[in-house]
Amino acid sequence: MMTREHKLKIMPGTGPAYRTVTARDFRKLPQLQGFPRERLRAMELVAKVLPFKSNNYVVEKLIDWDNPLEDPIFHLTFPQPSMLRPEHLSQVRDAAASHDAERLRETVHRIRVELNPHPAGQIHKNVPRLRDGTRLTGMQHKYAETVLFFPSQGQTCHAYCTFCFRWPQFVHLDGLKFAMREADLLVRYLREHPEVTDVLFTGGDPMIMRAKVLRTYLEALAEADLPHVRTIRIGTKAISYWPYRFISDEDTPELMAALRGVIDHGRHLAIMAHVNHPKELGTPEAEEAVANLRALGAEIRTQSPLMRRINDSPEIWAEMWRRQVNLGMVPYYMFVARDTGAQHYFAVPLVRAWEIYSAAARQVSGLARTVRGPSMSCTPGKVEVTGVAHVYGRKVLALRMLQGRNPEWAYRPFFAEYDETAIWLDDLRPAFGEPRFFFEEEETGLGGGEDPAVAVA
Ligand SMILES: *Cc1c(COP(=O)(O)O)cnc(C)c1O
Ligand code: SF4
Image 1 (tube, rainbow, N blue to C red):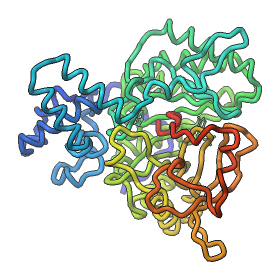
Image 2 (image 1 turned 90 degrees about the vertical axis):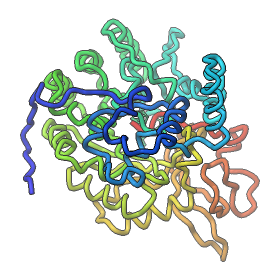
Image 3 (image 1 turned 90 degrees about the horizontal axis):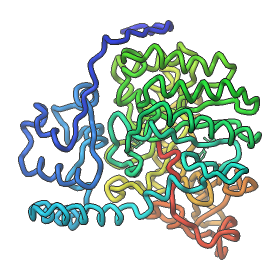
Image 4 (image 1 turned 180 degrees about the vertical axis):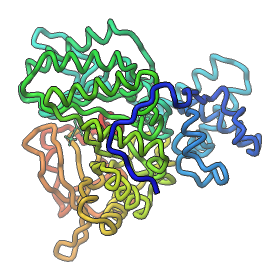
């Protein structure tokens, strides 16, 4: 048993080089040589629709190749034939067989639109403006305290999750010039908004950025010295997909110094780690990455959607939270997966989600119960399923608005008819014969759109 060091241990250049695995080359992986050709072909076809990228760490350290079809990380990162509905899969198959590139492109585009009708809209929702009218397309400001910031160089990831719907964002732009301009706009916006206490860097994965670029943003915030901005949150999946980011990449020392700068400036540095399965925290590399971030003075909070075939059992969540607490991380959010490209493959109904959440919570101590129950990021706000209740002999679903588009709505409890098949807020009906939910009075319908903010990294 290793004892955990509490000193920062950074060893630039000693880790493995980052190598991607993509739709073009995954068939060459030695680990896949035993797979039937037909299955490999189907995986290739699925990857034409759902973006696929993995890497040498995920392949070599996370996936159990003795039993890949049962392995959650294999499902999390590699395209699976049934992630597309049979009719979609055969359409892609036919289009690919026609050797007509234009037809294939159109087929793929049409299927993507069917899977996720508003992909581009998500990043453009709640786009704030400066007082002079400038639109800030790399930002979202929906709830007063927290501004989401999408640095343009951080819109890709070290590997892609098969459930992720942020397709249009996976374009990697580099360049410091961009960063300086964007940082300047961010600071100008924050100056105009004293109600903002938190800035959340999100993506993609902001930790994909070179240290120099991330430093440009963080230093701009520190130099602006805005007294109301108390917390810098950084969403990331790098602890799971590329822990070397915090241990041994060439620019890790500069990265850690940039992060440390936030703390030295008297601000809270919150790493919002995206962790879907306890396995991701089971390698010595992940442990070291966490230990380094903690030694730096960062707090790491964790979040994950609940997904069939990946983490849909109380035992998995209980183990995940226990491991997180053991490593000094704070369980924060369980999300309901929605609007994923492969929703039929991953979706867990709301009632089942609450059963898994509560059964997991019962297995752990209070320190691991800091996590909010299954939550949906919807147009009216963020809604938590708080349980199944019995009221005067009727079974109802109890919910709570955690964040509201109208700030007055936050923390209001409400009830919906019990429905075991509902998977999203707009599948639910108000309980007790009420004509509508309280937040619908100001809304024209529920709107099913999901915020990208959080799904994740
Ligand atoms: C969830 C969310 C936040 C952050 O909410 P917290 O409860 O403070 O973590 C901010 N903006 C959007 C759009 C969100 O969905
Ligand atoms: S969920 Fe996060 S880490 Fe995974 S592909 Fe989407 S943005 Fe990247």
